[in-house]
Each structure stands twice: as structure tokens, then as C-alpha cells.
Image (cartoon, rainbow, N blue to C red; front, top):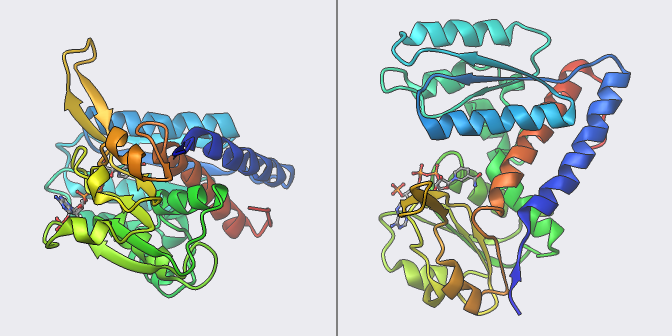
Length: 296
Ligand code: NDP
């Protein structure tokens, strides 16, 4: 019997712990704060930012939001980041990607104070993750680890296959799988658009993480019997519904369900965890910056 993993339920459990830690910090006169920065007119980016702000509200984190006209020069964004870096009431800073083409993404990531970089994308934080001494684990791969832990799915000694090598999902996911300790110790394969015979690789996976951004590219035939399938993909496909589109993952859910032993749906799988882990990192940031210890 294939288990459909309930990401909302797992995220709710983590959020309850985060909320308790927020209370501990507030009792010590520390009000955790997250600043989101949006330099885009893109509807999906606006939605992501408002979901993050709503999560802040629910957990008692002070959310602030900065909007910058996408036609402004990059210097305007950099100045705002500098201000937030220097603001002691802001513990975490998140610049919603993508930024406009005339703004260099790497410069943005490097401009954020690494101790406030709750996305975990600053090179210092990437380096710490790779070195096995993570400060802030990137939210989506950390969320995947939380799903596996909550479902009692052991990674040690397993074959993990990650489809996608982006800086925000694929690479940090693979890095977490190869680390020593809980949630790691997996034999890890990373696939991408140049991978030859992808199906042979994916069929080796005890744990398959799909993060390619290609609608339903992985079907049941590409999955080993009994594998755990984590579908990170969120893709809009046009439909003739009122909304005009629906969200699908990178995995063809119905056929994958025939082969896998456990699978995350889209939506309602990895997505809620990404937000929960951002809140987790924000509370961790407030704790590190204030010196007030919390249990996370
Ligand atoms: P990117 O576009 O940055 O990276 C996609 C990766 O997939 C690339 O490494 C690319 O290879 C690889 N890829 C693309 N096509 C294929 C293919 N046909 N076969 C094998 N590999 C392929 O995407 P992201 O990592 O940012 O996001 C991936 C997906 O996850 C998207 O759908 C995104 O919306 C979703 N997402 C969901 C989140 C959540 O919270 N649920 C959070 C973040 C992302 P190459 O490097 O060679 O180009």
C-alpha cells in the first residue's frame, strides 16, 4: 500500500516547535524578526512572499516587507540590504528570487550578512553546509530531510538520487545526503539535464528526490519498486478550469503511486515544509544573534 505523505501535517508539527521557541525568545525580550525583499512584479514571487509573511504572523515572528520597483538600479536593492543588515530588530533577511536581469544574483546573495542569511545561500553558509557544520540549512532540502525523518525513512546506506543540481535545491540536497549522521550517510547520485539514460539512474534510487521543474517527467516506470519519492517540483500547467492552470509536480503521481512505497503530493508535500524551515531558520537566527538559547 503506497503512503501519500502529508506535508502539511509534518510542517504543522515543526511550526508548533518553532512557535514555542518564539515564546522562549519573547520571554527573554527578544522579538524574532524576518524581512522579506521583493524586486519583481512576478505573481508567483508575490504569492511566495505573502505566504512567508503569513507564516510569520501565525508564529509570532515580526515580519517586515520591502518592495523595490524592478526598474530601479541594483544599488537601490543593495542599499536596502545594507540597512537591513544593520537593523538589530531584523534577524533574518530573504531576498525573493529571481531578481531582475540587471541585478547580479551572486552579488545580492553575498551582500546579505551571513548571520542573517536564513535562506542559507551566502557562500559562507554554503561552505559551512558542505563542511558539515551548517549554520542555516537551505529550507527546501532541510524540509525534505524533515519529511524523511518524520516518516521514519532511514537514509543511511541507501541509494539517494537527486534529479536537479540547482544551488537552492539539488546541490544542497545532495550535500545533506552525503553528510555524516542523521539524514545523511546515503550513497548519492546527482542527475541533471546532461545526464544520459536518466531512467537507469532513477531506478536505482531507494530515495528519489525530483527537483527539475519539468512537469511530470518522472513516471512509475522510472521508479524502483518500494522507493520513497519526494517531489519538489511545482509547475503550472494550463487547464481550461476557471483558474486557468493547475499545479503539478515533476513526478506523474498516479503511475508513481503504483511503484513507490511512499510519495509526496503536489501541492501539499514539500511546499509547506519549505516555509516551516524558513521560520525555523529565522528563530535560529534570533537565538544565535541574541545568545538566548532555544530548543529547536
Ligand atoms: P532550476 O531550474 O534552478 O534547476 C532545475 C534543475 O533540473 C537543473 O539542474 C537542470 O539541469 C535539471 N533539469 C532540468 N530538466 C531536466 C531533465 N529533463 N532531466 C534531468 N534534469 C533536468 O530549478 P529549482 O531547483 O529552483 O526548482 C526545481 C523545481 O522545484 C521547480 O519546479 C520549482 O518550482 C520547485 N521548487 C519547489 C520548492 C518547494 O518549496 N516545493 C522550492 C524551490 C523550488 P541543468 O543544471 O543541467 O540545467
